[in-house]
Length: 176
Image 1 (cartoon, one colour):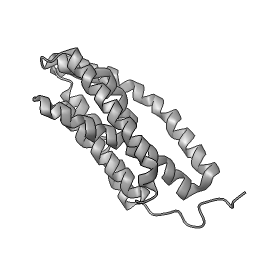
Image 2 (cartoon, helix red, strand yellow):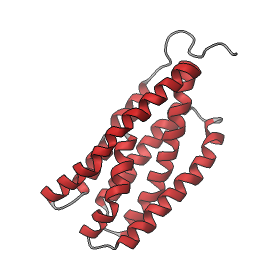
Image 3 (tube, helix red, strand yellow):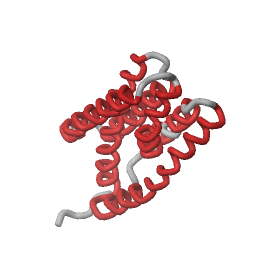
Image 4 (tube, helix red, strand yellow):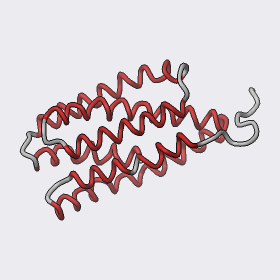
C-alpha cells in the first residue's frame, strides 16, 4: 500500500500541479523537501523504534502517509502542498522501519527477512499506479481522485496493524 502511494506520488506530482496551474519547479521543490524530510526521519527511526512500540509506529506512519496523500490530492493552496511533505516523508520513513522491525520481532530473523523479501517483490505492482493515475486524470480532468484512492489503500493496513497480535509460540529463532 505504501509503494502504491510512493510511486504515483513521485511520478504524477508535477503533472498534478500543472493541471491546477502550478509550476513543475514548485513540484520539484516539494518532492525534494519531502525526500529530505524522509531521509532525516529515517535517521531518527532507529532511535524511535527502541523507545516506542513498532505497531504504533507503523500505524502512525501509515496514517501520516494517508494524510499526506489526501493533502497532495486536495491541494488547492500552497500550504496544503507544503503540509503534504512532512506527513508523507515522516510517514514513509516510519513505515519502512516499523515494517522491518515487526517482521523480525514477530517471525524471527530468517522468516522475517523472507517476508520482507516478499513485500519488496510485490512492490513491483506499484508500477501500475502512475498509468492508473494518468487514466483517471484523462477521464476526470484531475489526478486528485486517483491520489485520494491510493491514500485510502493505507487505511486497512493501519487498522489491521492496530488489531494484530503476536503469533502463537516463540517468534524469534534461538540466538546463534
